Length: 493
Image (cartoon, rainbow, N blue to C red; front, side):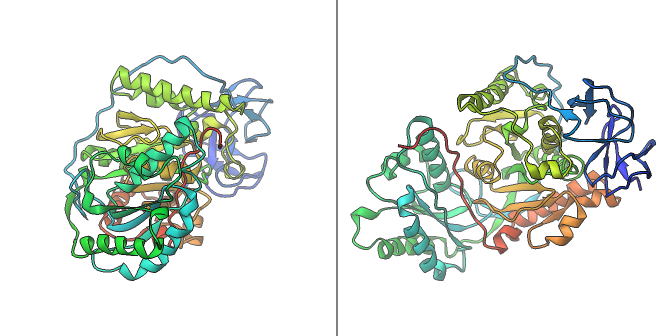
């Protein structure tokens, strides 16, 4: 077994697969290198001498330029490597049009809905329109636990601080997000709780909901009832009665929408977990299913790979806007576009945003891009979609839920316990993390380094997704972790 790996034959670096000591001669597949410095797992070593100012290649692409002369065997990281990225760019389309292998859809046990795709959960969701009624929804959740059972798989509230004192696109995003949750397929019933004087109240949110099953949604304006908890319980009991006898039924995996996200990444993310998710994504889209890739700031540096996979020039142009508009968002607040990676990423071996992006986009596999979505827009096109949302873990995972994902696959090298509104399946990049944090991790992709193949791991991940879609709880669910974070933009009045 090699102690390090060169990802692409063009690479100038190899990545340590375990802690290594200075003076060791380590193998990286086709060759060896003698280390001049200690190397932590996930960190990079130079495979040849690199001159100051020379681009450094990893994943077959530049991840920055050397800021000093680097000798073969030296550690390459933030002390001698800097990003090559800058502001908005002009792009050319060089379509590759990859072909997806067609597959017979797998079958999961889900809950068919009158409108749209089936749910993989049959839960009661309590959604406040404004932060002023957050504690009302929490009180209702506590009282409503007695309703769990039969077809009611859980009762959850999604408090947030928004819904009032917002303007323009910022307010519009909140309305889209709340309306999408109210009609999400995982919600067998939804109670929308308003205050009555907010500027994103029930009457403002209703038009964003589109066509929905009225038997599954109830509304309550707290200022219009005498006792909001008692009235809310009556409405929840009505919804629970409608759900009580519902049972799971066979559904095709072509009806699944799976969000793709990474966080707490390390130097192994782009080698183990993210490519495993990519294999899964290609499998699901081959079945006619849908995946959604987001974290636009973490596409910077790898965006041309996604652009060249766009199925049409229209999608290419939309992807260009997706990238450049997000850069403009940073610049409009006079913030640096490339203030990334995070301290945890750097500790794990990721040096520049290009380094992070080239690993991040491995989650998309090799399929063609079939759709490009604005924040809050529901997915309609089967296949791989790109979604406008930031890299923040909870904000991006919520955005995936809002766009229709029934589940989120979340790869991590350092670990994280959170859960978004839908099952949030954690995929470890390395075995030590999977072993240490069994209460957080659902799937260990670090086994790639122990001899399993990407194809084997991708197939096993598909089995895990089908099991979770059929009712097996993800770790965030067994821990009781369900949170919501709406993308905040603009001023607060």
